[in-house]
Length: 403
Image 1 (cartoon, rainbow, N blue to C red):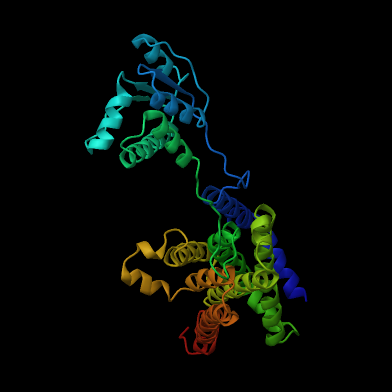
Image 2 (cartoon, rainbow, N blue to C red):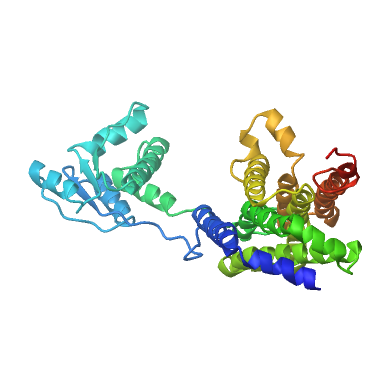
């Protein structure tokens, strides 16, 4: 196992790639995922309270009712009925929503409701620091619509009775309950998205690290020592493959482990079977960059080529796979092309596992990714065989090369 140990030592002598491609890109994935799926501090909805003030120039049952309705939305602030005082209260942020009820508003409002004409408008002033005041104003308008409907339905009723009916109607609220679609697992979205994003660091880190490992055995002096060593070609090949697999699994373990640490609650929302499928999909995708790294080694590519191929391949695959931009926003030709990328099948499989889809759908995505890896591996074997016969590699063509 000396060749395997030697290969692992080569990767260990290049820690900068692991730090950047595994550590830095994984942290970037954490920041992006946390921005899209921020942790919820509480499961209960809490309405924001907006400080308000009412300048009541009408002093009627309707104006008192509106003030009482606003009292349920936030704290009341006393503001004198003076232009300067009103401006200062709103400008300093002491009041976020200022409502002015003009004199004769109740009489004009009820008359307009029963005649079917336009209702008189209230004067409102919003603070520039709060968008919540707009919501409060919408709620006041909705409450006045209840009063208008009650007045129209009871033409003979006085203002007190109309207001009482509107207040009773406003107390009735709909029951809100969050439900999930049949078979859907809620709460796991952050972990699933992180794994989709991890397709990029997985591709880059594995291609570069394993590519460097494979490239080290392509050096002329190393090939000569291997040729005269008692180890068979099969043994050397298996040891290199084992070293590459160890590196790839180590990279995958670190990246997935970071996701499990930071998004453990999201991962725990998945059933045990779905979580096993998710991890299996990641391992199946891992074979694709591993096959690409083997191809680069068979072609005799060096460190610079491995870096270039790893970064470009990772960015192209993740973009076409819909990780950075949803494929729904892309042209039809791009959506069609995305189906020929392993990242697309990774995302499809992860989403299928997240909604507890039938196992055959997840296994199909897993099988497609394995086929991608097998195709690249077959090309690598052919390329390595052809290269071994060239004069540069010292094969049969070297004997025919004139000296």
